[in-house]
Structures are given as C-alpha cells and as structure tokens.
Length: 425
Length: 153
Image (tube, rainbow over all chains, first blue to last red; front, top):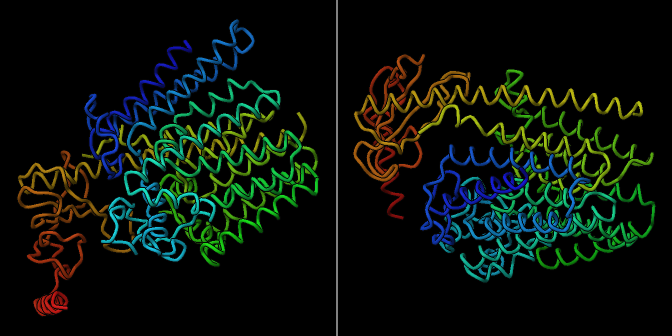
C-alpha cells in the first residue's frame, strides 16, 4: 500500500512536470524554454483538469502514506529499508520538479528582475519596481503583471544572495534560483530530520510529511520560492536551540527574517521559552550586522521591511480565507475595516500563545501556531504561505498543529477545484 | 486534557467548521460564475459565428452592484489572429442562462492591438447599451488629434 502511494505521488508529479514542459498555459508562466527537452518525452499542454486531478491524487496518496507510516511505525521490521525508501522518494520528487519548468507562479522572475536591476542596471530594487528596466532587460517580459511597479518586499540578505545570479543572464539566473530552492529544500528536510530525531519524534514521518507534501513539492519547489530559504533558516534556528547554542539560534532567526520577514515571529517565543540572555544578544548582534550590511548596500529602504509588510498585507487574493468568509457572509470582498479586525484577531492569538509559552507550552509548537494564524488571517494567501508551519508541526508533541496545518492545506486544494465542475474554455 | 487545551480544541474545531463552510460556499459560488462565463463565451461564438477560443471576459460595473451585477463584456477578434491582434468585437451580455446562452444587449468594436477596453478606443456602438458607451464624434476627433500629437513627440 505504501509503495502504491509513493508511486501515485511520483506519477502525479511527473505528469504535471511533463505537461508543464510542453508549452505555456495558465498554470505555467511565460518562461524561457529551460525544460523543453522534457516536453519531447510526451504529455500535453497542462490544463486545469489534469493539474487538479494530479494534485488531488497526490494529496490523497500523501495523506494515506502518512497514515500508514504513523500507524505502522512500530510494526515495520526493516527500518533501514523504509528509511532509504523514504529518502529516495523525497529526493526523486525534489529532483523531478527541479528538472522541470517554473510552475504556477511568476515570483521567481520578480526575484531575478530585482537582482538584475541591482547588479546589471544599477537601480535600487527597494525604491523601484521591475518596470524601471522595461525595454532594457529580457527578464522584464516574464515578470507578473501585478508586480511590474512593485519594489521588492524581501529582506536585504535575500537580495544580496540573489545578486550573483543576476549576473548569469535570464536562463542562467533562473537555473540559479532553482538551485537555491533545491538546496534550501534539502537543508530544510535535513534539519527537520535532525530536529525530529533530537526531539524524540519519528524522523521518517517528519521527512515524508514535509518532503512529500504536494504543496511543498509542486507549489513551493516548483515555483522556486524563496520561502524555502526562510524555512531552512527557521529549522536551523530550532536545531541550534537543541544544542544550547542560543546566540546562534537568535541570530539565525534574524537572518531568516531578513530573507522574508514572517519568520521573525519565532523570536519572542524562543526568548520567552529559553529565558537566556544569549538568545537576545545573538539576535541583536545579527540585527546590527545585517542592518548595517543592508544599509550600506541599499540605504534606508533596504532595512525598512515594516513598510513593505504593511503594503503587502493590504493585498487581497481570491484564495484567502478572509475573502472566502466575506463571500460566505454576503459581502463582495474584504474591506479596510476587515483588515483591522484580522490584525486584532492575530494580535490576540499571538498574545495567547505567548502566555501559554510563558506557562511552559512548547515554544516550537507556539511558533507554528503563530505562523498558521498569520497565513489563515492574511488576506493575501498563496499556497507556499501555508507551508510555513509544516516543518515545525512535525517536530512538536502537540499533534493538533499538524492536523490543523494539513486541514488548512486540504481546504486550499479544495478551493482550487471549481474548474473541475465548470471548466471555462 | 487540561481545561485550556479543551477550550482551545473546541475553538479550533468551530473555526475549522467555519472555514469548511466558507470554502464549500466559495467553490459553489465560483462554479456558478464559471457556468455563467461558459454561457457568455458560447453566446459570443454563436452571435459572431466564430469558434475562437482566445476571448477575453470582463465583468462590467453597470449600476452600483459591482461584481454582483452579473454583466459581462466578451471581446474577441473579428478575423483569425493572435489575441487582440485584429479588430475586436465586444458584446455586452447579461440576463438568465437559457439553453446555454445569455442575451446580447449591444456591443462595440475596438481597433487592433488595443490592450484595454477603454471608452475612448470604442467605435461602432450598437444595441441597447450604446448610449454613452462610445465616445461622441467630437471626443473621437480630439482623441485622434491627441494620439497623432503623441505619436509625433
């Protein structure tokens, strides 16, 4: 049964990648032909029907596989074989998607555009959108329409990391971004394995729960999202606390927040639970060093992540739960007052979690709940945002977090299914 | 199970049920919208006699009901070509779906390679919606002069 689940996961991923390599479709952003050779292996243009059926099949197989690993953890005689098979499955899924084209999202072209703006054209990506290089750079035509006039919202560490790739041209830079995502994924999975083992959890279950997750593989890795770098640093910080290197843990959280600010939410929970000055010292030292580097490289805009977050939190996506709830209550969408209510709800949730952490609740679980709350209350929800709590959920004793995270992911997938019932063509 | 944990779990279950309701409602809502759009595309193809697939649909904002007006404008090429590469015919469509189609209440033409359906680009308005939808002759002349002067700079 487990082998059948693994085969379904592989088959669904191969189907999506081969079809996506065939030609441009609404699910495959306009992109340089980096995976054209895969298109010649078969497949047809990736349509919503095939994509959704493959995604649902993969999600069902993933759920069954986790249930099997969980219930038969003690029965399995040869754990070495199971361990090798699990690592092999996750590695294959990652490599298949790495070999394919960019899936679903144009974000990676924004990353590349910002990098090329900085290193090729001498334009500050914190003050200008990609429209500043319109007509001057080949990457411009691939940037998503909504983001043409939007300056980067990512932290200075990520921007500096991306700069070398800007020198490689569009195709070279794109492969560089894909390689970053693959390496970050490998680091996230290795650290999840390590943390699960150190905290006394089933590491095979933890590896599969993250590495075989269809949203992680198809959306996260498929889109080469920088969220994977943030996740790797997040799990690195958790790993440091396990070896009592609290200064390094605090510094790593700050480094993660200067890739993508969301991960900063871990810091108060870590400080409150660990109750060691070294956590604060490490975080402050990293903040000063990184802010200085960011300021020297980009000026004051490079370290002003708060205004970027404020700007992005005003966006509304069709998949966000607040938007769905607005429709449920007969409203056409989310209004400014709803943003304020959602922020108030999030503050209350975080305060409750901080209180619980102070009273002894697992800070890793509390951080995971906070990340889940951020994604559920956000009016701008994308598939890769509901991956944030997943690596934390598999290394905590509070199983409710994993159930809630997977439940939210299942709802997200369910929300995509209307083209199956009424395909517009 | 401690009292706090019990309360938390209860709240989580209630929130989960609310999100399930919202998701199911939204899928049903989007399915209905898709069915309407399918009828609109079918209407455009039947009206023009062209079986093109590269059509654009926009929800119009006639009246004050916005998205809920259920009024759509469907635009497509008048002769074969890449999307928006030819003169486009736009139809204003609304009303109930009958036999898989809806009623055309008028329309207008757009020049080739017009990316946005703006009032100043429209011409040849016809039907019930034509009043105020196309620019007047004076406005069209002014727009033409503006375009020519812009092209010369």
